[in-house]
Image 1 (cartoon, one colour):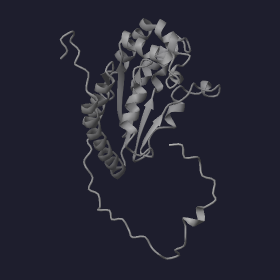
Image 2 (cartoon, one colour):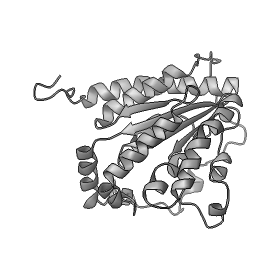
Image 3 (spheres, one colour):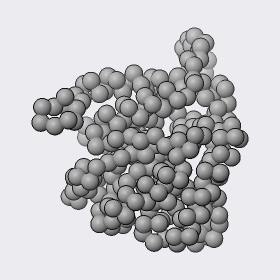
Image 4 (cartoon, helix red, strand yellow):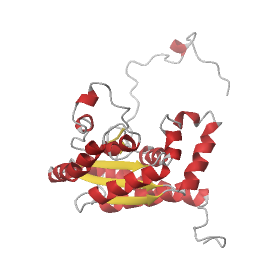
Length: 267
């Protein structure tokens, strides 16, 4: 522990990467189990702007198949979608057998950004919080495993992350029109978070809180927890042998590429 405060010392990159590699191998075992058993899993990731959802998703998905681990990050609803049931545009992305769907924000937009920024009425938010547990009970009773995470970032850390995006071309794209107002409305978002957790933290779909000021620890802790709540088993794989290349139809396939339009080799 650090002597200056109660926060743990920063996790060294070498230690972080070694443990991440081990956990990502476990995610591959999870993937095999999901495919073999036909499991359907939904992972909901919510949190304030700059809480670290995108980085966590990258760590979860960078070693697995996008055909098994699907990431859903929907844009703002279209005019047509605004006339539908709020949950309707999310349901079409629910998993089929052998799939894990990760929602980078979800139907909980109604309880957070839509409510705070005035995109829905208080009555619509109240009604959502009333019905959401019933909807999630239906999901679970239908045989889909539902795991929900709230990434909790502190005020000062969020400020630092926003500031780092202002002048960095590789990060500016992360600044959305909702980000700057989110800084002004810190306590409004806090109250919306508290109402959401009070209403939708149920026995069948509990919220799991991930402290995310330290991104590296957040990644490792969240992946470890996800693996712990899913009863996966290592699936035995058949031994794979690389076949020998056939000489049938052999020809100069290197020479046939001469005079093609190759890109300049600058590196």
